[in-house]
Image 1 (cartoon, rainbow over the protein chains, first blue to last red):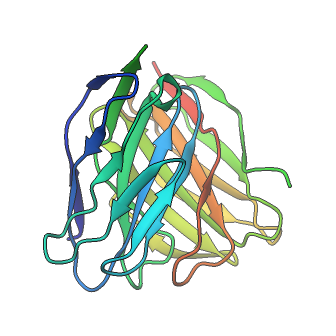
Image 2 (cartoon, chains in turn purple, red):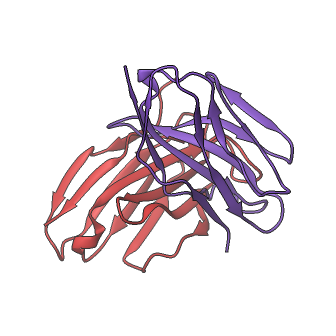
Length: 113
Length: 114
């Protein structure tokens, strides 16, 4: 079945460092890909999305490009801030799966001043 | 516009009991999905409801059930609780149930089974 694999955390960075969180997927058909973020004690928020190959999703300085040839959707940010500390989830939904999101295990990011 | 609300936020139950969790979607949203989040298994899809019909179901035992009302509010029920059911239960709503529409998540209900 469809699945998502993302790099394990926790990831600890200094403020203004470059961030990459790797995400690869296995899916039949043409999934849509997402990054969600979860701040402590809160639900998930959609960070960015890409619905077809070569699309680049971007939001709040974060970017990810839908790479069909490598089945990847890596999350990047050029300069992280302390406020970016959270858990990040890569997810996909298949073509006919409606609201069913399949999530990776999550990567905890901690940014130190 | 009010966000997705879930009640209660915290719940403590004993093994063998049953529990009902409630989710009120954003006004106008007709699709509601439920997820279980645990440290070991991560985020797992439970089921999705659209216009009072279950459209999709994850791989959970029959003890987990849900329903959706005509106003799109949804409830999920877990019968005969087990220790392993301790988790954060998240509800998400979206405008539609086909194709892809942004899902908005509630803050979750933290269930502890003792």
